[in-house]
Image (tube, rainbow, N blue to C red; front, side):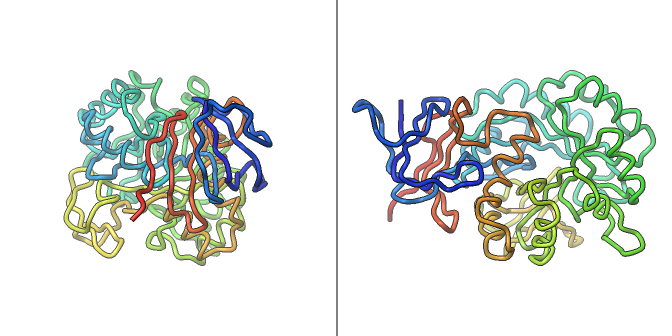
Amino acid sequence: MKAIVNGKLIVGDEIIEGKVIYFDNKIVKIDDKIDDNNLEVIDAKNNYVSAGFIDIHIHGSGGADVMDATPEALETLSTTLVQTGTTSFLATTMTMSSQEIDKALHTVQKYATSVTGANILGVHLEGPFINVKKHGAQDKSHIQPPNFNLIENYMDIVKMITLAPELEESEKFIKFIVKEYPHIVLSIGHSDAIYEESKESFSWGVSHVTHLFNAMNPYHHRKPGIVGAVFDSAVTCDIIADLVHTHPSVLDLVQKNKKDKLILITDAMRAGCMKCGTYDLGGRQVEVAEGKALLDDGTLAGSVLKMNEALLNMKKHTSMHFIDIVKAVTMTPAKKLGISKGMLKHGYDADIVIFDKNFSIITTIVNGEEKYKKHKR
């Protein structure tokens, strides 16, 4: 058994001080005092303690990418992310050839439980079932209509699918997935859907929107599109809070509208936590400089955002409450995925992060084991 003392515990809608959190691989209890001399005690030194961060959309980091389709790449990604407070994530694929996607899915299926850092919760399939008009940094030559055969062997690990519901065959595919695999989150993304099409897809079972504002038509007062449909609905959405993909004023607008339906993501590529330079994303060359990742035509190609930086950006540039910022990467994504993570609560997984008021990560704990500790200089 282990315990964390002297922390500001973020529990639900409260910040609790003067309490002790006990855990092994699960959260055991929150109590008033240390009652066991054999405990391994971690002193939070008056810093914040919350459930570990969950990233439902990340392609790579630390020089590795999910589409590398190797156990080494998954391990690198897993061990890099704990530096940012992320304790679990969805390994996110790209629109590439069917063979490359199959290889990436097979690798996650085989090696996800072998990683030693942040947990791999499963796969977020971003494409190839998207609209060629909104391909963004995805390779449009590999875009295809919804095809269950592509993913049939991997339904145990597919947890989220981003697709364009306005495409032919999408309605049939969506309704099939909702009926047969209700645990999978279906999300609009890389889509040219208009407002009415978006709302209709919500009635079919689409319940989420991928990187709101990006790879979709802009909000217009006569053509509100996907964004307008999101604002008028109870669906969840995620957003890239790197101040590059989305302006600070828009981040504030969205959090005021969506409240507990907002999830923060990084959409990071292999250049995450790396130096500026030339990298690749889905087989396409990307130049990373000044916090931006761009294709040679100037298209944004994912991000180099760290999750704790996303939280700090929301704190600095929006009116979002501190606790709600944390919930947007803990409780809300966990609830969306239907997993017992995201809360400091009895019986929940002991994924815990200790951080200061500016979200600088001090300690990251995964399944009760310390996986990262900030070194003092």
